[in-house]
Length: 119
Image 1 (cartoon, helix red, strand yellow):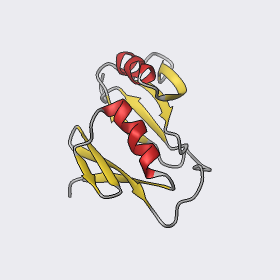
Image 2 (cartoon, helix red, strand yellow):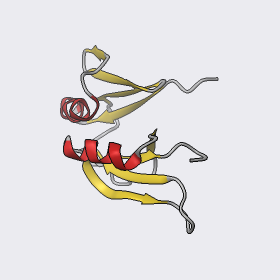
Image 3 (cartoon, one colour):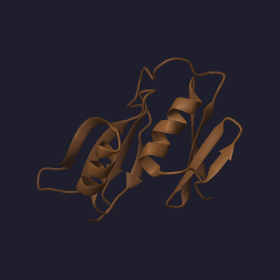
Image 4 (cartoon, helix red, strand yellow):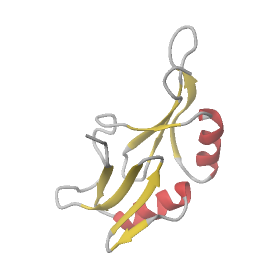
């Protein structure tokens, strides 16, 4: 098997598409009300979903993790582009460890920047 994509369902997919375009640039896919960006080898897609209304009431239930060799640098770039900051970069663990930063989209879905494992 190979992980293929993530679809973020939204009651306002146009708003999310504009938000993620501001962070990740022009989408590589726009098909009706679905918009997607290739990030590494995976596709991030936003679109409508009949079961989704309002804000995400449990944003920590599923965290999308984006690998970054420079979490503080990529965090600064995304924050400057308008990313909603939940937690600024920090090292995970008592003796240092991988860097993690948590951000959110306008629907309240969390995503994180994480150092590659072993860094």
